[in-house]
Picture 1 (spheres, rainbow, N blue to C red):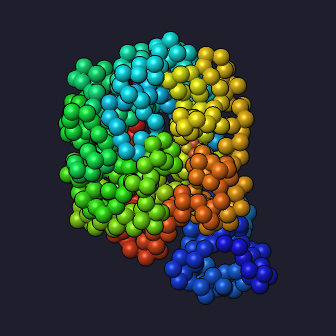
Picture 2: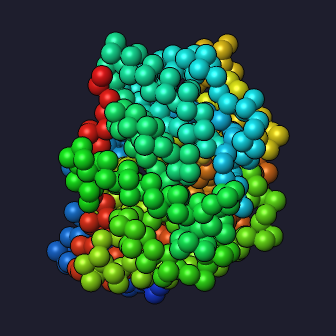
Picture 3: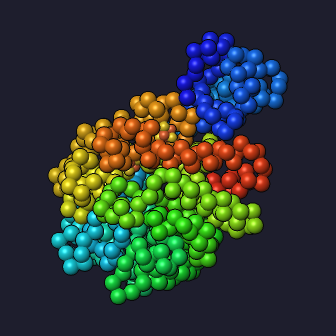
Length: 496
Ligand code: SF4
Ligand code: SF4
């Protein structure tokens, strides 16, 4: 929110460090560049801007501690905190997404990946191409490498996945990086043999649960069976396999993702109950995105941002209620934002940082050798538009990929200082824009935030969180602080 002309004359601003502000109900929220925040009454805000907030008053001291007042010490602290919050800028791409195949054994109404039929084996990545891809991945300057298997359904190209697991471990004997693997799977092609190999390689497994069985099976069709039954059966087996390796089941278990369709909207409580019943500790409530089949099926399964937000708030209210009764369940988007709001760290979630991770935090390698800024860029390619392609393997060098025009363009377009609305937004310290989303929804890399659905959703989620934080309710704050605890992932590093 911009300051009015009369406010700009306030002498208090001479003593203030740079800040943003916005209405929060009938109060005023202040944030600064390092993510500190304070809630002021309108009168306190007027006094602050005019330089009339009494020195020594509770609000004055709070603002001083939170670095809203200028001093040599504040400048030093601000620069240290800024460096810590933006440390991700210096690490290079760590997330490397390998699309092992476009084939899939399920048909989802919203498939963002434009899946192919099981018999179309020409949509598989060959082990030869996988070797070149892994060689390229290991050229990253980042100390950590996460290779994430995506599809289609990656398990249906088992030969190549197995090759990558072994070859990457072999390469890492020399490279000595923090190597991790993760797999995003619908579980329907899992077997005991595959699970044993995945466990040997410390692979973190993530799946989809769209809510109770009727909703899940309605969204995700598995020929001749129930996709829900398959997912639940294997969730339990994978959890048991983690436990057999001595891992704490409270911290280490299959993570599940949920894509919200119109069919989910009426059932926020049932969705939460289902996750709790399945022993999950986190729900990732993700709206539909304008990629893949979801564009064609939107008329049938889509909804407005307001409808999504009603659903989201009701699910959140219910999760908070359950937490108060001692049930551990958190919402992932809220947890990412709360980590930015309540801790000195940035969780480096690539879609919610400035600049975003496109090319400089992640790279996506397609089954056919085409390489993209991120998986979403690859999704746009599958829709017939190569705007986010950064090269082709074999052929492109690591330097060529990273110095390509799309990486530069997306880095600029996702830097919030380059977006007039974000620049002034009180939520800038916690937010991030997605140029690929902007391109797909609004036709340009720089989104028009006043009509941008993604912006509207994040703004409302942040309104919701700050509305609760401003209440000062200590029990609630304790719950939110628990949501920011990050589990130690070193047990998944592959050394040999
Ligand atoms: S362009 Fe969008 S999807 Fe790609 S990394 Fe950036 S925020 Fe994520
Ligand atoms: S995307 Fe929207 S909510 Fe986020 S910083 Fe920009 S204007 Fe604010």
